[in-house]
Picture 1 (cartoon, helix red, strand yellow):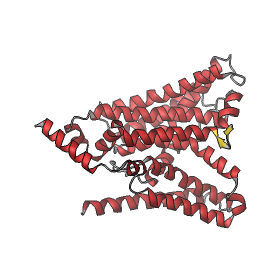
Picture 2 (cartoon, helix red, strand yellow; picture 1 turned 180 degrees about the vertical axis):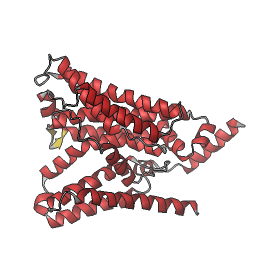
Picture 3 (cartoon, one colour; picture 1 turned 90 degrees about the vertical axis):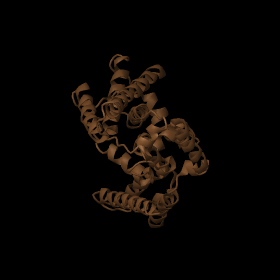
Picture 4 (cartoon, helix red, strand yellow; picture 1 turned 90 degrees about the horizontal axis):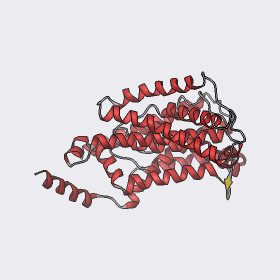
Length: 345
């Protein structure tokens, strides 16, 4: 009976499976991309001298690269109908751990360290993030604690652990070579940190759209019980999804070290909410089951362009979070409207 049900559902899935292009872009990314283009056009019309400059686009891309990597992991989490409030704190913990590790193996100051020390710092950052992600995944999938509660707890725990590591102080001594080459280096005019973020995003898009892991992610988010019935190890898959989100948060922490040249223990308090906002703005349903990586890319840059544009045209900075909040609420409202319309068919 189970085999027949599994075969039937599999055949239906094959018949209804959208094309690769649709799976890569998602169903609702066109209007999101148009919103992004409209924002660029409006700010460009007001201040073309400041907006349409190569250095403006370079810096905008570079400063959003860390958030983009965080948002790739968050996309998988939200598609499973989950949430991860801890990614910002995990980023800080990985950043501090990595900087302290590089300093430790360099005699207390890694400013003049070479690539061996930098590689060690990268390993520490990624492993640190992965450990927190694995802990989140096990508590959610095995202990059956709601993702909101688990990740809210690890949000505070990771932040506290980062503060304890260096007594609440920022960690300096980031290698100059890392900052020059990775943080601010360019390749044919494209910042290297942007290239890395683009590679991570492209890998995430392929993983989500063309692999069994991606199909399982959508299946778990659409109907967890149905996914379990057709033989998907829901607990194992959820553990892997949160492990992936934590690992990418660790990588983002290392990227932040390279870009800012210091491991800061403050300033990332809202990174978790920014990543969630970016994913939802990009068309991924907060209820799970739908979403695309291209939509997340658009979602990352909509608030970034909005904030940068408001600064360029001279709007007070206090209006920036208000404007982003309005756009976010509008995106969620549209998502709910589409969901209700689909359910009424």
